[in-house]
Image 1 (cartoon, rainbow, N blue to C red):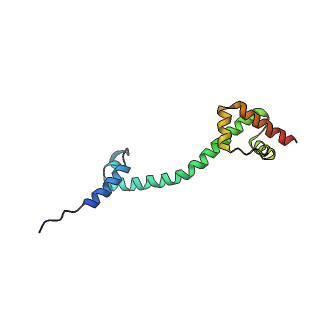
Image 2 (tube, rainbow, N blue to C red):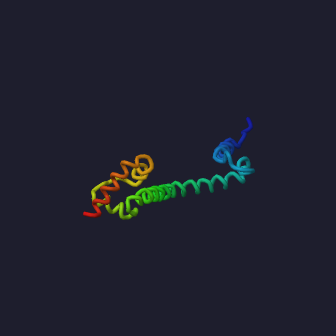
Image 3 (cartoon, helix red, strand yellow):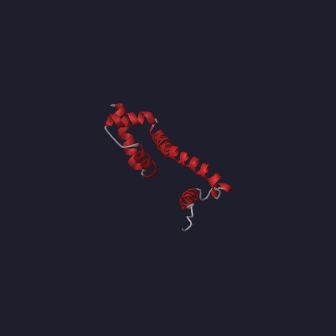
Length: 119
């Protein structure tokens, strides 16, 4: 009878963990006992931060819009209120991009929003 060699599954599992731990510092990249918990923790951070990324970017867009409408004598909340009253439906991501790259187009939107507030 031939001999059965084991460990193929374990090696495959370990290989998967090592691939995920590539670039980690010290023993965390090449020792399974250190790499496995490090990779698990990294996955937890990745899951959490995929959700957090959406919040962070929305906050950034709001800050950019707020800074861009200040020269027109508006605040962010008044600007959004004016946009709603004027019937302009442009999301914050696009507004932020306009404020940075197309100031003339953003100015036109801001003036329409300001006019809707006055009316």
